[in-house]
Image 1 (cartoon, rainbow, N blue to C red):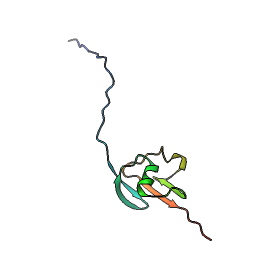
Image 2: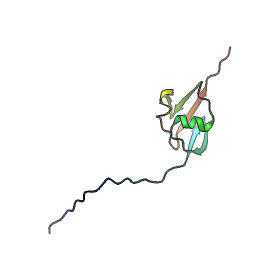
Image 3: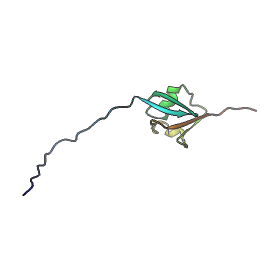
Length: 88
């Protein structure tokens, strides 16, 4: 018995699965469900957090301010947002 293989030249196919519109995140120890932000900067904006004097930790790792726009946020991530407060 012989086998015949047919090769068809075609363009790549892009398969898009369901898009998650909400995520559940642990933010400062409390679980919250909200619209899925693409990155840390969008998360801060959605939460109404002023980004001037804060630090962000994502899954126990500090996220540098320069990386906020390129650091994705995913469902079930752990976020800590710390605000620096001056005093004397």
